[in-house]
Image (cartoon, rainbow, N blue to C red; front, side):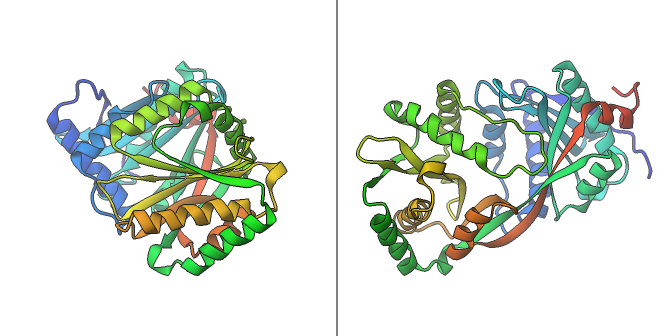
Length: 349
């Protein structure tokens, strides 16, 4: 492997020049086109907003690899959980396809490892897709551990059986007659924040393979900052929930995110039903009710994407019955910071 000389520079979104933003947007689109070839390019203003408008509690640092005036790679170190999982941090490295296998990823790893050491994070976690084989190769060279296999699954709205959505909701109401659906758009209603914090604990029961994730307990401050971040980026969230009685505990919820700049796609994010309320059709109820609302009120949406662990059989059963199909395979890797340092050598900067 040829080791290419590049200049690694910290990217500061508060002082970045127009030329740097334009270069980053162009690189993002080259890398994203490999992963999501059917999607339109990301607009420059979207790149800027997604980098700048993160929640206030998040710590995201970026480094760019330059060869002269050409941007050839990017590296990201991030901490998204300030109150737990203090042993780990996330990282991503992307190198332009025509510049791979020349040591650029190694150069970008160096400041990431230094950041992890500075924050006393002993573990680094990243995601790789089967559409970029070089990513897995790099993780194998690091002697990293692949701990979880997942897929991005996609649903074409044109394939949805609307009669099935109706039947699922009717059956759930028969099996769980004392439960009521609720809905909101945008930020969490203040009066529901305590109940939603309890409901979000259900996500800690999702399969995590052998990745060393600890349970995450969301705080009211985090919820409010997440809401503010999405509002700044123009992303609209819909949340459908089901609760016992008119004012009882929230038994489960599902949420989707829609960006009006890219109206044809929708991201299905968290869905959970807490253990005491399972096996009553409530998961199918909230998913069917949400999808029915999307079809009725968001006719621009052509497809929905979601991520699922391959071992999450109950959720995969619901999604496959709805018509989701595998779109892209992904793997979650973790590597000890000391192991990454050993790969780099003690003198790497």
